[in-house]
Length: 132
Image (cartoon, rainbow, N blue to C red; front, side, top):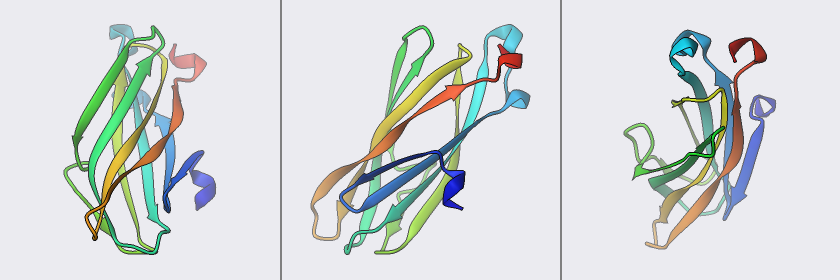
């Protein structure tokens, strides 16, 4: 199953895997709207329980426009992960260009109260040539 995820980052025992796919049925190309879904798996490979509390995204489109997105948790959740556990979720990203990229980090807190950030790997968002 790990072959499904094209992009991987590891930080402090947390592995973040990402797979993105263009969704033509959610896109409206004549209106300048392209849409991607991305599937994320967060794995706790550390020896401590952690909780994901915040997210930070840097989304860049083909024109160089950068959008920063900060918020609590992921898709309305702040998952707690014991050692060896993982959490999967799917979300989406619209752009006004046919390609761009995303990257960022998750803010975690350990049971002992220490906070740290785990990298979300850089990944491209690229529509197929037929959707440009």
